[in-house]
Amino acid sequence: MKFKVIFIVFNLVIVFSFAFIFFMPLLLLGQEYFSLTFKHNLIPALLFVFTFIIINSYFLSNWKLFNLLEAENWPQLIEFLEEEIFIKNRVRGAYIKMLINAYLFSSTIEKIASLEARVAEKKPFLINRYAIHFGIPYLLKRPPGEAENYFSRLIAAPKVHSRVWVEWNYAFSLMQQHKFNDAKETLMALAESKRDHLVLLLTLYLLDSFSKNDAAVAAAVSADCEYLKKRYTQNNFQKKLDRSQKNIEVLLLSQIFNDALGWLFPPESDLTSSSTRVIN
Image (cartoon, rainbow, N blue to C red):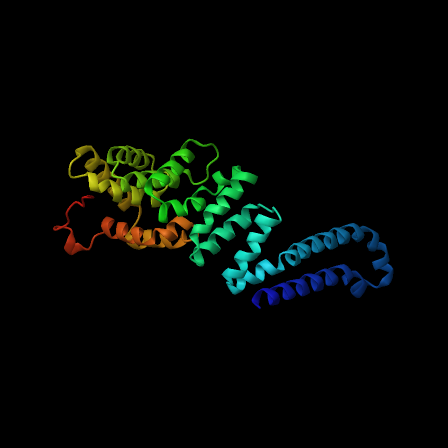
């Protein structure tokens, strides 16, 4: 309903504004002056009408999609997008992203695998663009070995979006399989790069499990924790997390982020009694 109201109000405002500006010489200076300026204003007027038609055509052609999104009707939205992608072969980036999000909201993550296969067949370059989105089942549902294979392939692939997240996911899959040496090597490289402070926090949180038995790791974790603390308070970092909720990985790993943030900024009473975590 809100979308319909906004659409109607938008059109009314645009049409009224155009009519007021176009016919203002007629209202203020009379028909004789308006006739003189009409030819000069005709081309801009036609361009406006052309642009207006294009914008309205876009909204009208996607009317059903926008209404389903506004209503958060995930089953019908999934049905609509699956028809667009699987039947009509309209494999578009926006459709892919929306469909994966709809699968998440409707708890049908297993369907992402079929979408991945379809995209790999029709437009394989989009797999790299939406690497994190297609990686969700590997993180949440698939065996860690499959996650390792998926993310390791993407690390070496060209034009991968959110590569730093791909590398962290790869390290996480190694940790799940107790391949600690390989995981530590990847995490240390991530910590050194400091490309993304959110990823850096999670990286240090995982690396801390090695600190007890590795002095080099302990020193790196300590130094990088100070690096973050000089740039953020706990509240500032929390705001950064809140602003990043559109990142699907931040949303999925919210609990780990909360734990990591509490680890980075422990309560004062815990400072003297904190101990290093060990992953078994």
